Amino acid sequence: MRSDGRRPDQARQTRIQPGVMPMAEGSALIEVGNTKVLCTASVESTVPRFLRGSGQGWITAEYAMLPRSTTVRTPREVNRGRRSGRTSEIQRLIGRSLRAAVDLERLGERRIVVDCDVLQADGGTRTASISGGWVAMAIAIQDLVEYGVLETTPLKEYVAAISVGIVDGRPLLDLCYEEDSRADVDMNVVMNSIGRLVEVQASAEGRTYSKTQLGLQLDMAETGIKSLISAQQKLVKF
Image 1: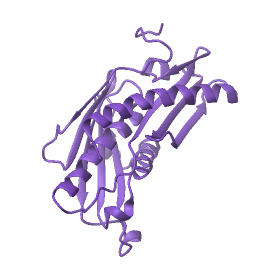
Image 2: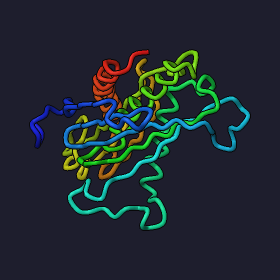
Image 3: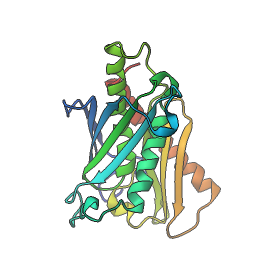
């Protein structure tokens, strides 16, 4: 048993509340164990310069941690004058993951910005941002269809993400912070609803690992992601 009583292959309890920010075109509050991320989606009638005139849309993301989302206050990055490398990496990961779920040509020349604000961090904030961000984005897109802005939905697949790692020689699914901080292997897996991988981030933090261990972790991640996608499907249908 783990410190929180879970089995090695058991994910944390996840709850997704849609529509928590009525001013936004789409929103969701995702809670994964003690990790809480507020995701909002905003639709803009513009695209980056490199896409102007292409007829193609764009999905991008911004990520931030509130100062007291952690046990020790984290200074706001705006006061430092620039984003950290970690923040930039996570934003790009979220953006790539969400774009994989959308037919950007059907979206047309408009941009959806998904803001992911970490209210409380206990491991897996980037993966929770992807799973919750998909719900916020999908709600915004479905509204575009409902109001006749789009004839058909550009959504292609559900997309969710989860962490997995090796701690004390054991593969574990959905690491909390206590486990993540001492993991020998740390992996984040993004997958869509037809079982295809969007992205795998895997690092040997303390020890190297075998191909067999890699496969076992991917299998565990797939099981966890299927459960997350099932939760998404109850909230958004297309």
